[in-house]
Amino acid sequence: MSEPEPALDTPFAGIDVNKWLIDRARSAIKKKLGADYDPDKLIRLLGAVCKAENLPDSDVLDLAEMFIFLMDHNLKWPLGSQIFRHYLNEGGLYPPVLFLPSSHLLSSPDFRSGVCSTQWTIIERAIADRVRDTTGALFPRDRTTGEPKPSVVTDDLGTQITVTPAPSPLRPGGTETIYAETSVRAISEEKTELAATFNKVGVVSKVTVTSTPASETSWTIEIVEWTTWAWERADFNPSALPDIQTFPINVGTFFGAPWIEKQVIAILEKQYAISAQCLDNLIGFDKYMLQLANKQFHRVNIVTGQTVDYFPKPFDVYFSHWDFFAETNQCGAPRTYTITDFSGMPP
Image (tube, rainbow, N blue to C red; front, side, top):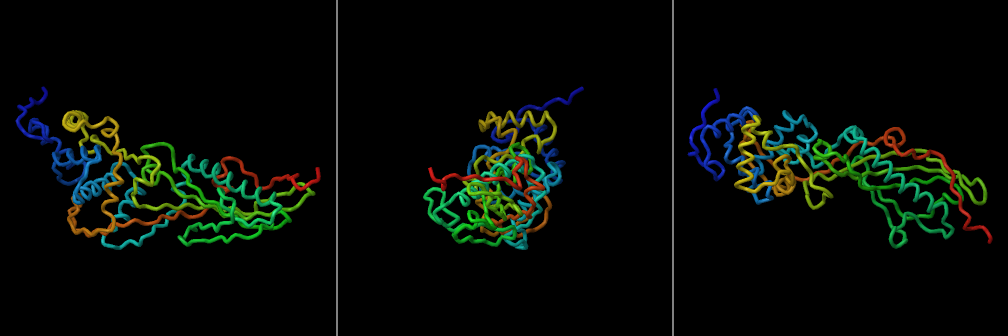
């Protein structure tokens, strides 16, 4: 026989429900987090996030600590939890930079294809512009104005590289190093660790190219070396994102049993008019993490029970370099090819 449900006599998230539901919701949270947390407060926090309402820093930290635990133990997202921890900068131990292996990105076919399509387009055009130039122009140039413009890129150790405009040796024949930087989406599929953690990253290529005149109108182009790396600013700035980052953390993540989840969702829909999308996945949490930046907090972690000091601050993430042809040449960019130019020939 099913357990009888007591009368609806207990306030819960602004609605009268039976105490039986609250007790089971509390038990489910403790089983999931290994710690007690008021289910009424959790419901209110989830509702506030879904509606992008303001929250005090203490509540944001409650959620951040829960999310870190869930990323470690439920989602199995070690990269996601590492980014959260590094940002919170517990104990002030972390430097404002993080170095990661490029395998995190290269595991994504979307990323590899995106790198090839964007980087090859830029490099191919840059080489062609230099080979076909007959005016002695300086490179690099501004794409809009055509005027010489220094190029500044960041290497995989965080050092800025400045390329000063200079004549190109490619038309008469010679060797030049060309840099290209663009933004590439890490992965198109939502609800994945990579998409939720980085979404888009900056990708930089360093390409050493040699040109050899084959005739009066053609040049043989050889790409001698092509090294690529990536970086990103981990600042949780929602205005810098092209899309809303999504976490597959939802009501069911906290409350487990479907029947509890169903009851809680009904409360959220009735009391907060929460959209089904947000009930299924937590969206827009970046703005809450951003509000913590450059502050200091001394508190007890609501999951571990340990006293902690937080010094949240944005930081740069640098991914190790890789060989473009070996790892990301999904579009078949050639190592050797021919460029023709008839502009200098008499009519």
